[in-house]
Every structure is written in C-alpha cells, then in structure tokens.
Length: 136
Image (cartoon, rainbow, N blue to C red; front, side):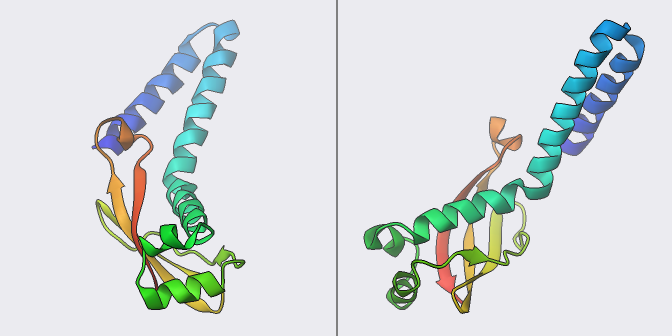
C-alpha cells in the first residue's frame, strides 16, 4: 500500500516538473531527485546500515550494556573480541515487524535479532530495536 502511494507521489512530481515553467522546473526536479535518493537509500541500504551501527555500538560498549543482549558464553566472546568490526552483514532475513541479520564478528558468525517499529511516521524511516545478539 505504501509503495503505491509513494509511487503516485513521485509520478505527480514528475508531471508537475513537466508542466511548470522552466524557472521552477529546476527546483522541482531537484526536489524530486532528493526525494527519490532518500527513498532509494531507505529501501535499499538504510536498514542494514542502521542495524550494523547499533550492533557495533552495543558490542563496543561496557560489559553491563552488552550483557543486556546476550548470554554469558556469548558475552565472554564479545568482550574478548571487542576490537573487531562487524563484517559481511546479510540482508534482513526476518519478516514484517521482526528482523534477523547475520554477520561475521572476529572468527565467528553472529546473529542479530530484533523488532521493527513501522507505526505512524516511522513508516518513512522505520525504527530498529535490537533484542538479542548471539554467536552462531
């Protein structure tokens, strides 16, 4: 439903760009390009980048902060590999309001699970909340 509405808005902007005089056409075309780039980023890359940043921040935080997201065995692994970076993130393997990503952290694969809030204004830029991080 949202995709249809957004495509409709983009087509209306294209029509306005064609009809409007040349002075305003540049402004509207620029606006159209910026809106298109924003939605392209959000739909294409936004979710994995946001989850990766959140995960990196959690894994580089203090021990008490990391412990909220994992069990003791995984906590020891994350503490001992604190200087590593999260690499090779997959795309979202979850569905609807649940997300699941895998990535490489140190020498092991880790899973990142959480919830997506897409209510209200968050439908334009969904909020991702990590619930659990664990070593696979």
